[in-house]
Image (cartoon, rainbow, N blue to C red; front, side, top):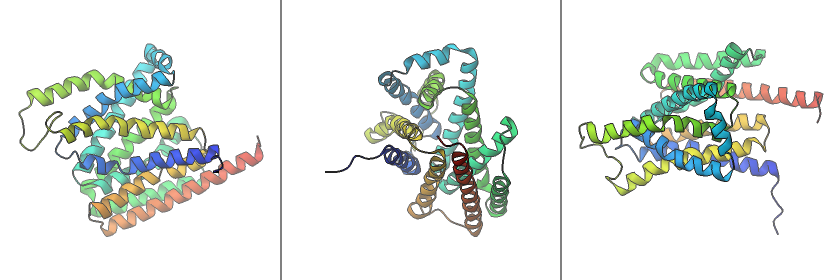
Length: 306
């Protein structure tokens, strides 16, 4: 007889599964290299809408979606976050399909620290001396990379900026992760349907590109983009309720680490000395930041026990 898993362990399994899925996304998108990145993002958004609506229906969250979309201020907020997430997805898919997985993974290593900095600047959230030091170390790493990899550094910075800005907007918006993603993809649904029609029927056909219906495998992968979008988020959202924020924060670095390993060892992307120094400094800064966050959280729990 197996003893039942504790709530925290179930949460850990859910979070690990989500992070592994996100970490292996480059492998998925590499299978779609014959499809234009903009078309991949369009399908990812379009097919996500019905799937997310089904999930919300079974979670009895459709009224929350209706309330959010009826609120003018929330609609504008969701429009802003929708544009940011679409931009992030497009840059990421383009980077993966152009063999810049290392640059993409660096962007997601930088984004937590940039998010913290944005919280300080825009929301007045306090930063300890160790967190300032962590940000300074990360900035040094980015500066080192700029010396030898300036041509791909924009990818990392654009991904970090778009994701951190998205996190800032979503933090301000009083809306759950699944309801918010459904609102975002719903807002983008019609524009991307029109874009997809234009790309498929108006743009001149290219012998090197494929579209939905040209190949069974490609068609299934394009539709499957909705599942690789929604399911990890659903698992991660469930895990957040079962785990401490400190543990969740550390796990956030698992996905870009897997992406880094995928780019280096599966797709043999070149790893220059500046890459090694930059990633090393980023990992040091993340370790410093995570340790400080964990100690601060433990101190708060000891001061205010439940």
